Amino acid sequence: MSKIFKRSTKAGLPPGSLIHIGEMKEERARFTIFDYDEDHFSEKEMKTVEECFHSKDEKTVSWINIDGIHQVDIIEKIGTHFGLNALVLEDILNTDQHPKLEDFENYIYVVMKMLSFDEEVNKITTEQVSFILAPKLVLSFQERIGDTFDPVRERLRTSKGRIRKMDADYLAYALIDSIVDDYFIILEKIGDKIDFIEEELVTDPTPDTLQMIHELKRELITLKRSIWPLREILSRLGVMESTLIMESTNVYLKDVHDHIIHIIDTIETYKEMLSGMLDIYLSSLSNKMNEVMKVLTLVATIFIPLTFIAGVYGMNFQHMPELAWKWGYPVVWIIMISVSMSMVLYFKKMKWL
Image (tube, rainbow, N blue to C red; front, side, top):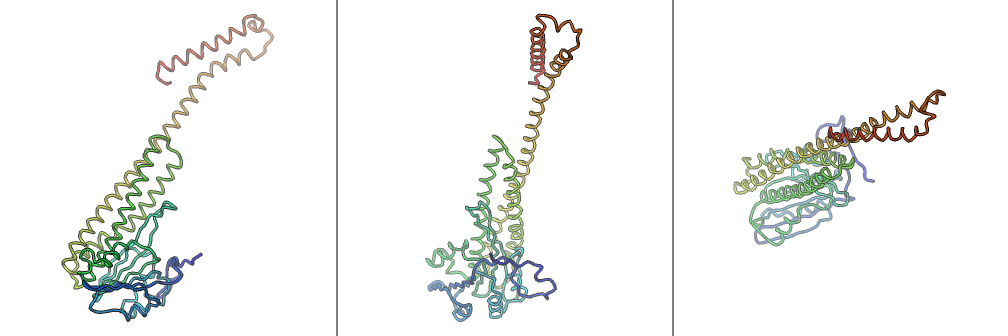
């Protein structure tokens, strides 16, 4: 079982202390580098982080991706080589960081949450991804191997679209857009779950239905925490006066910002729907209980006079004339049945049955 470090580990340490906070999801870090321009492209997997430094060509755009961020010494070497602030390195190693944007003189730092839907456990999984945008360079830091960037890699390999003609800021946009696109897939999965719950509420709500509602509400809270800050981040990126972001890229960043607004609105709609479902479930449960109590009350009411009659003639006093009467027993039955039928007819007349 991998070891998990918590924030309390850093208590008392000075700012910028490099400690990995989170779960170790890879045994060893993996380094891949893409170098490209309009006419040339290369893709390599490096054995050591130092090889990434020597292969950088200043004329081409480079994307260096690091899978596995638990090795503090590697992150420290990257920070030293590219001149990254110690606080940025600290945030990269802290995997429970909230999404945010920081603009430095020579680079821009963005941290996001990459969400995916695990079909095996039927739940949303979260991974932190950090980006460094510098001149002709994008650094990406992931917790584990496997991501949503395969369409971007394929566009780089085949030179589809404008990505190989653009600078590093467009690559950063493409990677962010790829993460945001997966948010829509997550929302579709949640929408399917909500439809299933709605059907159960109409047909036969059970305690499992209530549990599913609570689980979905927790998932939506996680989604909101991961996505809501991106509204401000992408808004700032779209209007940022930085030499690292070209004016031609701003329009694409604004488009991703619109997607985020749509996603947030959908999340709020789903939250309202689940709150309504919870009210419906509780109302349905209350109605079921009322129906049960109604039936039990009617049955008890019918048996009250019958119990009285049975109690009177069950006292076994010696001088009770009816006890010695030949037709006493059948007459008592007739009276009891007649009383029961009369009460049932009365209840039906009053629409209580």
